[in-house]
Image (cartoon, rainbow, N blue to C red; front, side, top):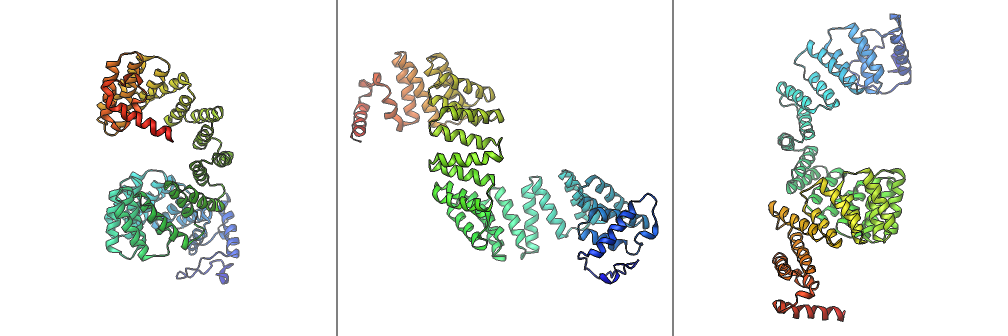
Length: 499
C-alpha cells in the first residue's frame, strides 16, 4: 500500500485483500477523521468517492470503528441509494455496541433491498445485542426462508435455540449440519453439549469422541469429553480425559481445576489438593480454585489450612457468602462456637433468604444445647417454607429439649403428615422413623407407656435396623414384651464394652 499512501485517490486495487496496518495510512486517516468533524468542511481535504469503500474496509479490519462510521456516513452522502453503504454502517454500529442505531441502519438497508439476507442477519445480531433472542430467532428464520441451506445461518439458528433453552431444536439443527458436513468437528462438539444438557450422557460422550477423532489434539474437545463423563458420574474416565488434555497442554487451568474437583468427589482429597495447587500457580486469585482447595482441606480435616485459604479469598471477595459460610463450618468443626456463629450471622446478613445458612446455624446451636435460640431459627425457616417436613422435625426436637411436649408432638406429627401427603415415605423413610421414635420418647417421658410402645413399634416398621439404637434409650420399656430384644441389647452392650 505504501505506493499510494499520499496520493489523493490512493489507487486501491479492488482485488487486493492486504489491509495490514500502515502507520502512514493511519496518519492520513486521522487527518480525514478530523476533517470530517469540522463544521465547515473543505471537500478537498476529504477522501474521494472512489476510495471511500476501501477506507471503510481498512478501518473495520484494523478495528478503527469510529473512523469507519464516519467514512460510512460519507459513503452514504456520496451514494445515498447504496445498499452496501447502509449495511456496512449497520455492521459498524454493531462493532461499536450501538445496537439500536444498528437496527435503524439495517432497516435503511432493507428498504433499499428487502431480500438481502446479510442485512437481515445484521439486524438479528443487533437484537441479540439488545438481549432480545426471540426477535433474533424470528429474523434468522426469515433469512433462512430466503437461503435455507446457508451453513452460517444454520449455526446461528442453533446458537439462538440454545440461548432460548430450546435444546432439542438446537440439536436437530446441528445433527442436520453433521449429515451435510460430517468432517466438521465443531458440529459434533456442539451436539455433545446439547446432549449433555438433555441428560443424554451416552450420546454426549459419543459425539465428543467423534469430534476428537476428527481433531485429536484439540484440548477443548477432550475437556468436553471429561465433562460428559463427569455428568454421567464416570469419574475414572473423567480423569483419563483430563489427563489427555494435560498431555496436549500441561498448563491447562481448566483441566487442573476439574481434576481437583473430580478427586474431591472421589474423596481423594490429597490428590485433589495436588492438582488444585498447580491450578493456583497458573491463576493465584481464581476464586473457584481457592474455594475448591479450601474444601479439599476441610475434607482432610485440616481446618487450619482451609481457614487460611478462605481468609485469602475473603480479601478480594469480602461479601462472598460461600466463603463466609465455609469459615463458619470450619470454626464450628474445631469447636470455636462464637467465631462460627459470627460468620454464620454474616452469611445470613448477606443472604437472609437462603435457608441452608439459617439451617446450619440452628444445627450448630442445637449441638451446643442452645435449643431456644435454635428453635427461633427453625421457626424462621418454617415461616419461609411451612411444608418442609425436615424443619418441623428439628423444631420438634428443640421443643422436646425445652420440655414443651405439646408443641413437640405437634411438630413431629406435622412432619409425618407432610411426608405421607406428599407420598414421599420411601424417600424420607429415615425421617419418618425418627419422628415416630421421638414421639415414643415424649410419651415414655410422661409415663404413657402404651402410647410410647405403639409409636416405637411404628418406628421399627419403617426402620428395623435402628431397633437396638432406639431401644437403648428406653430402659422402662425393656419388659417381657421386648424380651427378644433384651438379649440382643445385652450382647450389643457387651460387644461395645470389649472395645
